[in-house]
Image (cartoon, rainbow, N blue to C red; front, side, top):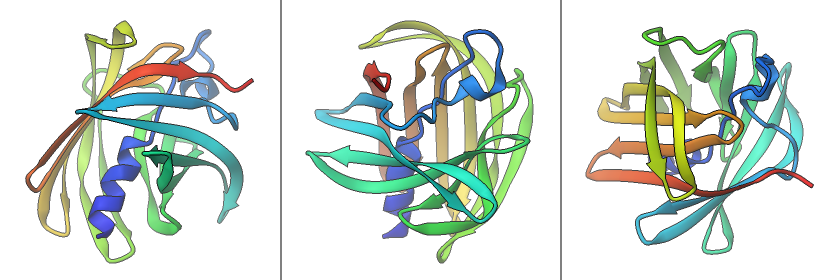
Length: 190
């Protein structure tokens, strides 16, 4: 069950590249920012609902909304290394899950070894660059891709981050699932 919640939470993490090279603009943590994705025949939205402190870190609480209901939440913080998830659906990670290293560099990799509830997550991310097209448009992106084990079961994740927009595409493979989310619209906070 937590594995499915974890996968929904990983779908929720939009990030934004800097307009002027400022590190904090890679991930728009402003309350009210929202992203709308197409996932197969479903529509999924993510929204920064509030900011809250977890341990020593100030985090943005991001809700994933499916069929009008909050399906899961996650908490994301900007750390000295980059942007990391520190909680999924109220369960804290024993170590933050760094999913966007700052600044992103093509070919750079980093290890993940954490526990969320009873789920052990191990693997590594690798940075790259790619040009893609999704319903919201065509983008030059920085990617963050990784292969992991969640309680010994293989999983793979790939994020495409576009300048001034955020996550424009995400692919998750786990067990018999192969889920791709493509951005339809980004709505900045008003």
